[in-house]
View 1 (cartoon, rainbow, N blue to C red):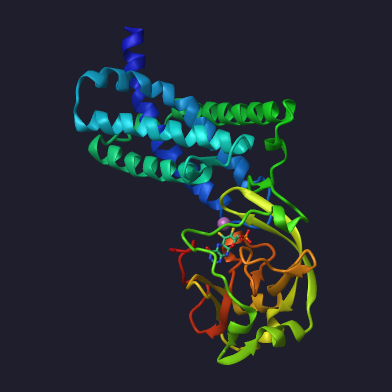
View 2 (view 1 turned 90 degrees about the vertical axis):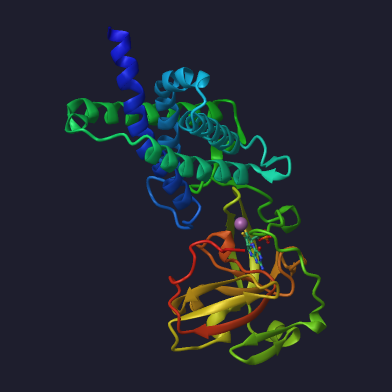
Length: 338
Ligand SMILES: Nc1nc2c(c(=O)[nH]1)N[C@H]1C(S)=C(S)[C@@H](COP(=O)(O)O)O[C@H]1N2
Ligand SMILES: [Mo]
């Protein structure tokens, strides 16, 4: 009798918990990949606690899946696919945090992690529609409150244990940044990874063939190089899970462009681009050098942005144009589309 009721209540509660925890894991993951300025507690840590709470919940769901394996209803297949995706997302999350490998075949570990997590999010939604878990008033009772507290503590304990293991075995995962990223090639530009957001190939641009369009005014490479440059030590932190600190040298954007417009857009030779609020003109540099030498093709020659405190995808490479814009900076996708 006791077994029966626990297996009936267990999966139900587990479904409710997953319905909350999986979206929460995705949101905290996205936040970890958006922020560039430290906050406490680190979003990557919150993400870890939430994700490990999913590990704690998942076994409760096992009885439903076991019972369902024989029956091939589409709801069961969704449940099973959900479990598989959650397992992949958790495994790749742990692999990433340990620093074991940042590639899995043709993909980066992060691509598999984000892909499987977004897939799980879709399936949680599908699953919830197909098999709605009505929230009864009794669900909001003291037991539910206790359950939530137990989950939180269990998630936190699992996270502390995992981080403790990384530290004990001297894993490079032990000193990640607050974003969860691992250090790569700091102050050694040739050891810094060359990354594209999605599919940009490295363009080979000759200095003589290039010019910079600043609000309609064309500047040659030589003219840009002759402008006053600043040294800027800043960390490039890529959403694929690594960061690198370098000494960059470049022209602060407010020396290139003064404007009353609300924002400005920076566009690459490749078509890639981002829009920034106008106040950022005095916090972003158009750099031509890293580590005392001109940029390499991969890192953005002839010129690329350095935007301290912003994640790597804002650091537009192979800049072709800087132009004022009337469109507010927040009116764009939070991440580039291509
Ligand atoms: N034109 C262009 N600029 C780009 C990208 C891109 O795909 N195209 N990727 C961005 C991303 S996601 C990162 S992390 C940094 C990587 O810079 P790096 O290759 O010099 O390490 O460049 C940014 N600038
Ligand atoms: Mo990136």
